[in-house]
Length: 164
Ligand SMILES: CC(C)(COP(=O)(O)OP(=O)(O)OC[C@H]1O[C@@H](n2cnc3c(N)ncnc32)[C@H](O)[C@@H]1OP(=O)(O)O)[C@@H](O)C(=O)NCCC(=O)NCCS
Image (tube, rainbow, N blue to C red; front, side, top):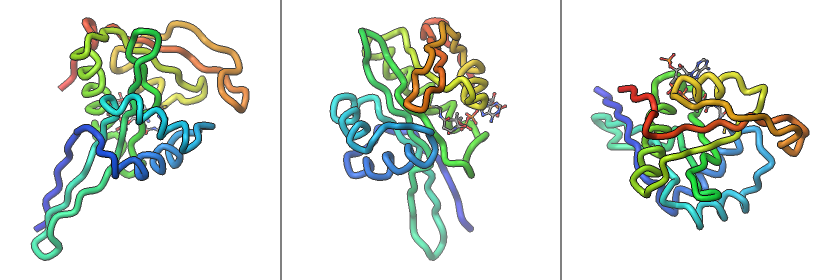
């Protein structure tokens, strides 16, 4: 019988290649691999991965990255530079656990405010952030390389909606 379990943990250096490819696969971005690697070098403490482990009788144990969150510190507060869960694993609470874990890491490091930008057309992510207590602050016209506007969101972790 195959058993599966999910774990959220800090990313390890050899996993950076997988994170870059997952970022590019799931997020509409102009970020290059170099940009992502540079972020990781500075902020690896805030790069977390979700892994799914299959344990089969004959096949041994196999662990795959199914999601990541890339945090950073910007202007004295926490910032989420990217978060994604591979399509087949979405709507199972993986994104929620990644978001909670990185927010807890920020809080542990003394950053109780976290911001992020999201494309104005990305309704799934907007719903996801709002359902987790993020509040929209303002819009930045033409923020993205293709001219799309961004909405800036923030959460104050002291009031972060706790979900189990
Ligand atoms: C945003 C994203 C990370 C959410 O990951 P996820 O694992 O599916 O999220 P969860 O299962 O933890 O969702 C938690 C809650 O968020 C909301 N939510 C998440 N995806 C949603 C969707 N597609 N539509 C409506 N609500 C959604 C729901 O309230 C959901 O709870 P529910 O499933 O009990 O209704 C994922 O959709 C994704 O990778 N999107 C592509 C990348 C992206 O746009 N990233 C953000 C910009 S950087």
